[in-house]
Image (cartoon, rainbow, N blue to C red; front, top):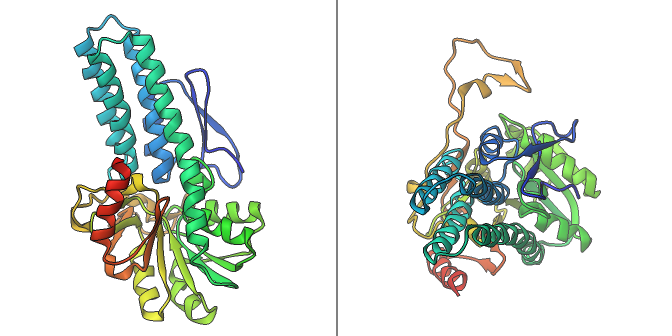
Length: 352
């Protein structure tokens, strides 16, 4: 399984996912600004992966500013500015803000205790590494819990990419599929291509082939007919932000899949770690939805496919209401309705 990112000697190497599946190249990020650019360009993407990348970026920012002749207050101000710059790159995925906040809070606490700056750097570096490593172990737990929900001869439909590429390793939705494959449960996985940037076609299809999982690529507008004709018996997707009531933001097209799954009587599962929950967000109506350049809709794989003068609408995410969700699979177990109550319990577990 290829590494999404490698941290070594105060340098972050990120797998350039814009080149996949045809090119495997890593981007060297020696400062936090390059990480921010990588997140914005989708060179690294997926909520857990950009969270971990942001954590390492905060370490790079601290290293940069601690080498300057700054006061403690000025250092914290510069670090806060770096945090805000990172968070602004992708406003929907809550893991990004969660990880950057976590590193900032760790640095602030240590500095207020008058701990020497090199020691502070070691402390926050250790925290960033923990965020990275915890994500992998959490994904494997999600995989175990999720695989238990699937029937034998599972015919699964998934959307976008929620695999090892979207995380620090193993994957959320694809982590469930990987575990189910290990248990000989998977008959077929149908992969939405995921317009307009083809994360399903470029990334998920590639990952499944690498793992020897039986997979078939479809266009997004084939999903309903595929559900009916191919006897899909589970839909599994990842998430970028989950509200306190269970409403879930994920890659655009997820909401439509949930509606189709409801009509066809197919269970619709969200797979995500607890870091993807925004416990302060009461419902999906409060989730900020990133809008990207309309040019992405007017082209396909870099080729212009529409009149230049036509308007384009390009939200990156949509919100699936909780009543269309069968269950949310986390590292702490499977959450079902009433989601608000069970998410409150999850919040307490996370605090412990």
